[in-house]
Length: 378
Image (cartoon, rainbow, N blue to C red; front, side):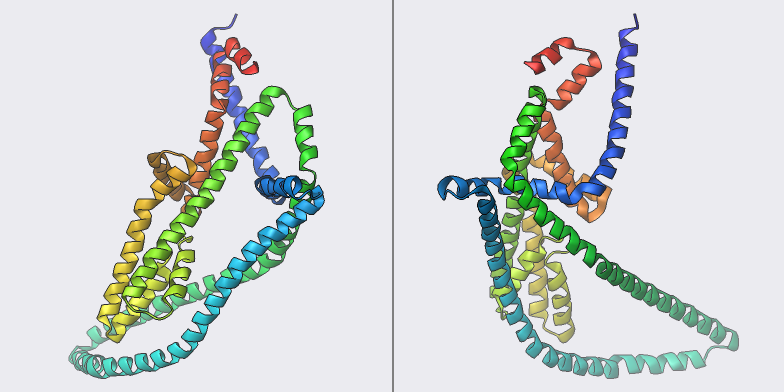
C-alpha cells in the first residue's frame, strides 16, 4: 500500500491539475458563450416577476415573459426619460451660461497676461541678453528639448484619444449584436424555465442538485444585495451633493446632484469629474467662496462613501465589513478599477461555495475521508 502522505500529495496534485485545466476550459467556454450565460443569469433573476404574472394574472408563460420585459423596460425607460429631461434642462442652461463665462475667462486671462506674464517676459529677455553666447545656446537647447517633450506628450495623448475613440466606434456593432442575442436568449430561457428546471432535477445527481441550487440561491440573494448597496450609495451621494449645492445656492441643484449620484458609479472619480473642474474654474475667476465650498462638498461625498460603503455592502450582502474592505482593495490591486466590482463578486462566490460545503468536500477528498463522502451523499 502507498503511504497516506503520498496519497494526499497525489490527490492535491490531481486537484491542482484539474483546477488549472478547468480554468483553461472555463476561459474559452466563457469567451464563446458569455451572452447566453448573462441571459441565463438575468432570466433567473427576473423569474420571480414572471411567476407573479403566471400565478396571479393567469398569463401563459410566453405572455408572462413578454409582460415582464415590458414592465422592466417601462420602469427603466421612465427613469431614463426623467434623466434625459433633467440633462436637457441642464444643457440648455449651460448653453446660456458657458458663453458668458468664456467671455469672463477671456477678460481674466488678458488681465493676468498684462499684469504678470508681460513683466516676467521683459525681465526674462533682459536676463537672456546678459548671458554669454555659450549660456544662450544651452538655454535655447533646453527650451527646444522641453518643447519637443511637450509636443511628443500632446501627440501621444491625441493618438491615445484617437485610438480609444476608434476602438469604441468599432466595438458598437458587435456590442449591439451581443445585446440582441442576450435579449432573445432571455426570452427563450425564461419561456422554458420550467422545462430546464425539470431537466435539472431529472438528469443530475441529488447531491449535485443540492449544492448547485444552494449556491445559485445564495448568489441571487447577494447579487441583488450588491445592486441594492450600489443604489443606496448613489442615493447617499445624491443627498449629500444636493444639500451642499443648495447651501452654495447653485442653479439646477437637483439636476447636478442627480448627475453626481450617477457618476458615483465610476470608481475613484465619481462626482469629482464635475466638482473638481468646477472648483478650479471658480478659483480662476476669483470666486473663492464657491471654489472652497465645492472642494468641501467633494471631500464630504468621498468621506461619506468611504465610511458607508463597507457597512452598506456588508448589510446588503450579509458579509463581514472587513472581508468586503479586503475584497475591494484586493480587486483594485489585481484588476484596477474594474476590480472594485470583481472583488466583492469573487468574495460572494467563495462564500457561497463555502456555505454549500464544496471546500469541505474537496478537503475530504484530499484526506480520503470516505465517511465525509457518505454524509454528503445523505
